[in-house]
Length: 380
Image (cartoon, rainbow, N blue to C red):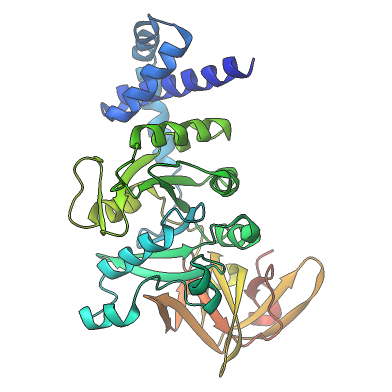
C-alpha cells in the first residue's frame, strides 16, 4: 500500500508538470526524467498520451487561472532574498558558504582573504576545534543590486532548535547534500520543517569533485525524500546545482562546472521567492525576534525578521508576547547585516533582517511592534 501511494504521488507530480509545460512550453530534462519514472513505475505505457490529451483540453482553463493568479499576486521586495543553508554535519555547508563570501566581494584583496582563513563563519573556539557549526549566524552578500541574507545553520541534530529559529527568518532554503552520501537524518528533519512552512528548496549537490560522486543517485534520493515528506508539486520541482565548495565552482551539469559560483548565485535569485510585503507603514510593524546577541558596549541586541511594516531608528516600540507583560522602549540603534558584520541604518522595511538595541528585556519569541501614540495603532 505504501508503494502504491508513493507511485501515485509521482503520477500527480507528472500531471502537474504536463499542465505546466503546455502553459509555458518549457520543461527541463530532469523534470521529464521524473515524469517518465512516474509513468513507468505504474506500468502506464499510455500515460503520456492520455494525460497529454487531457492537458490540451484544459489549456484554456490553465490560461484563465494564470490570469487570475497574476491579478492577485502579492507585493514582494525583489531587492532581498532570505535563505537558510541546511545540511547534515560534514556535508561541506560551511566551506560552500565561505566560497560564496569570497566570491561576493566581501574581501577587498587576497591579503584579507588569507587573514580571514577557512571556515570564516565558524568563529567560536569550540566550532573551530570540532570542525562543526554550533551557533546559527547571519551574513549578507550582494549579487548585483540584490541583497542575499544568508543564515548559516548547525548541521548536527543536537542543535535542531537553533535551526528551527533560523527558519522563521528565511523565505527559502539551500539544501546542501554530499555527492556520495545523499540526504541524511538531520537533512530530513530540517527539510521537513522548511517544507511545512511552505518554503522552496534549492538543492546543491556538493563535493561533486569526489571520485566516488554519484549525482544521479543523490538527486533521485532527494526527490524521494521530498515525496516522503509530502512536499507540494511546486516544492518537488526543485532546481539542482552541482558544486564543489572547496574549489569554488558550480554548474547545472555535474560534468561541466563553471569556474566560479555564478550559477549558484543565479539559481538563488530565480528559485527562492523574494519576501512578501503587505505593508510598509510603521503602525503595521511586526518583527519576530529569532535570536539574541550581546555587544560589549551596546548591551543586549535582538535579531528579528520584519514581517510587516517598517521600523525607524529612535522609534517608540513595544515587545509583546502572549505569556508576558508588554515591554516598552525606544530603538537606540538599528542595524542590518552587511557582509560579515552589521551596518547602522535609519530605517528598515518588511523583508529585511534587523538587529536592534534599546530594549534590554528582549527575548527570543518576542514580537516587536510600534508604540507610537501609546501603541493605539499597533498591529495585533
